[in-house]
Length: 517
Image (cartoon, rainbow, N blue to C red; front, side, top):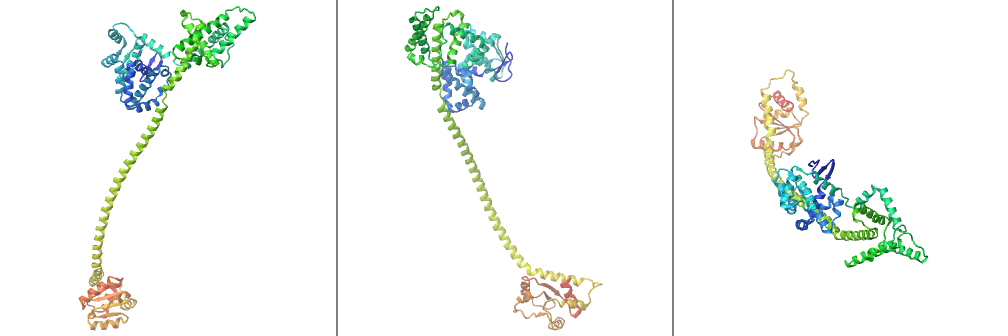
């Protein structure tokens, strides 16, 4: 039995790998009821299926282009449905069509662990109450069975005889190009037979671009010329020409009865290649069907007519199956979908931007509130600084005074005269002290300025021009003191406190330490 598979949908026929999908599409479309069902399903998602068909590799497969219009149309639909199923991994519609077209086979494959053709043959015989009554239908069903096994992931086994028939179907030439290739494999034999035919039937006078009617007319003219000259041809050439002419006219009458003007066919200009193809087809038929005893005079016009009618039919089929409008629609649809996708993306970005903008507004509002709160706190701190600033120098001065009061004398301390000399370089304002102390200190520092405690209403803006303010804490006015501290907070003036400085040496020593140490 045959059951090997190197890949999905691929059968291994004795080392030759065959894709069974084209034959599966043909099998689905072979029955008229199936074609109607395929079309019914196809209409529901026509444009999606057509778009997938357009991109399919099977659309140019030679097998799918040699069937009548309705069948080829259904095959194209089946390809579109299959490609959509592969793209979406949803085979529901394709399997529904398969089940409709091959109900018994579908159930058989579905219910069994594996597909055994011998078992199915017995089942098929019982169902049809006879043998393989429809060989074509049975072979089609085998392609369907293999396809289902691939989808259901089941093993399968085909009989050698069936596999041989399937291989014969696969290897049958399906296009003129394939037939031409087949003939070319035996080119020398073909050439010899054509040469004999031309000589035997006096066809050597044919020139490319003539019609068959013109060819026969030339032959008739030659016959008449021979009779006029009184020449008797040893062959039956005149009789052959008459036979072909009468056969040509006979087939023309048949075409007329079918509603086709024979003149349109008879006057077609033939190329050398077309003329050769007619002769090749005749030799093939004679070789393959020797028992038919075909006569050239009858067969040649018949093959000619069939080929011309087939060409007319294919041209009509091409027009009937023209999908240019659908292709334009799909292009427009794809562009529409692309634009829609971009619009959706734009809407999404706008929503995202709007949310971000709202978040930024919220954060800005919160930040604004924080700024206001910080500004409020800064104002409070500024006020506290302003309130504390007058105390800053005061505290520093008091700390210095207390420190120097407890400090032990230095061994290398400057002399009183040296200290006095250095202090003379400073611009000093003295505040407070008893009148006697003030008088004595004026003698020590004649360039200094003195403020008595009673001078409470005096303006103090002049302090900015001095380097040091010295306060005698032994005697001072508290109100004036506060006023003095406020003024000092506005300027970079050093503040020094002295206490208990009753003599010259102590005044100079405390003042020196307060300023320099």
